[in-house]
Image 1 (spheres, rainbow, N blue to C red):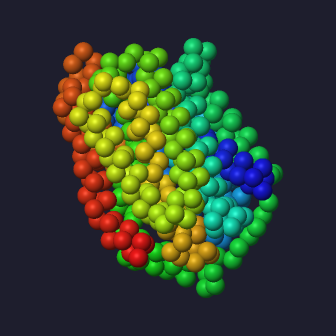
Image 2 (cartoon, rainbow, N blue to C red):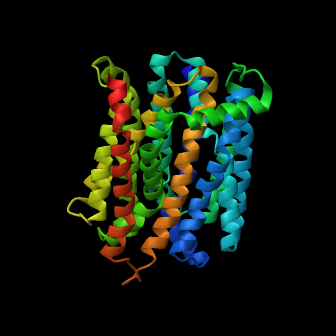
Image 3 (cartoon, one colour):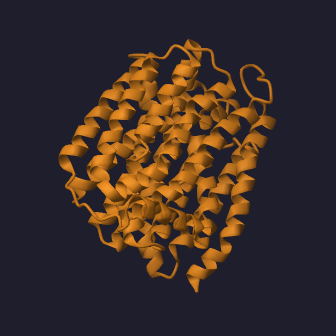
Amino acid sequence: MLGRVVLPFAAGYFLSYLYRTVNAVLAPEIGRAISLDASDIGLMTGIYFMTFAAAQIPLGILLDRFGPRRVEAILLCFAAAGAFAFSLAQSVPALVVGRALVGFGVSSCLMAALKANVQFFPPQRIPLMNGIILGAGGLGAIAATAPVQAALHLTDWRGVYGGVAVLTLASAAFLWLTVPDRHQTAGAGGLRVQIAEVAEIYRDPGFWRVAPATMLSMGSFMSIQGLWAGPWLRDMAGFAPDRIATGLTVMAGAMALGYLSVGAMAERLEKRGIAPITQGAVGMALYVLALGAMAAGWSAAPLALAAVFGLTGTACSINYAVLTRRFPLRLAGRVNTSLNLTIFVAAFIIQWGLGALIGLWDKVDGRWPPEAWAVGLGVPALSILAALIWQIPACRAEKS
């Protein structure tokens, strides 16, 4: 089933993460063609997260009702249309519309894969299968760095988006033709009952012990790795564009390794008595340390810091598997999308909010000052730390 299930969904998530992070390299090029300030950059890139988030609740119902193969293949066609529209944009509103459509179109790429993994693999293998899918996203993030920078020697940002749009259509066809159907009843009672079951997920106290740290950790990681890491490397480490691409590649490579490691180690560590929720909490605490170092302007070894940031930023991903265990199998799609909704709302707010905070300071010689980065990155770091303290009772309950 690896070739017929995991590979097609991994290809979709590869493209999803490529779209998510490519503006970290392309934003300066887009800004030269279409005048953008910090807030415009944050909105243009962050709107992806908002439309992505808005799709999550209906997406969970659709995945549980119609299955991951049909839902993702159709939505990827919308992503391709958004990428084509973005490549033709001549103004900020047009850029925003294109990115919004891309965000909607790739909104199922991870959730459909996680749903398929639950359908096709036994519970003890799910963290590893999820890790493979998430690792493919890491490869997409790598592709969005140095390879995209190299592609700019052959074409411009419009050509990059047009090319990715073609790849997206090919991925939709690959998924539709390859993945077998294993349809599962979403539950009796129709749409009203399915929506009521989503409400039950959100009323579950255990869900809200885990969700805050997960949404803030993943949301901030996606926002920074996908956009603001490049400007940080420029301003605080003094990197030139080619060196920035190298730093982003290191970060993305560490992220891919982190996702694979989280999935591969989860089962072994659990056998040794370390619950998955505790594994995630420890990893998120290390991520806070890396984010805090960036906020403090530590630049003695920026590539090493980029690697640690990428590696630890993936730790919270194990909480998808943590939460699906709390609910019946038939709710797996809705549990994952309910968590994903909180993550992508947080990602949108953080990505746009970072632009607003950093933009409070004027650039000096084309760079934002250290104070801007201290505030912009310090706020999410402290927020995650508070959420981890809130999660401690859930870790203790899982241990007992």
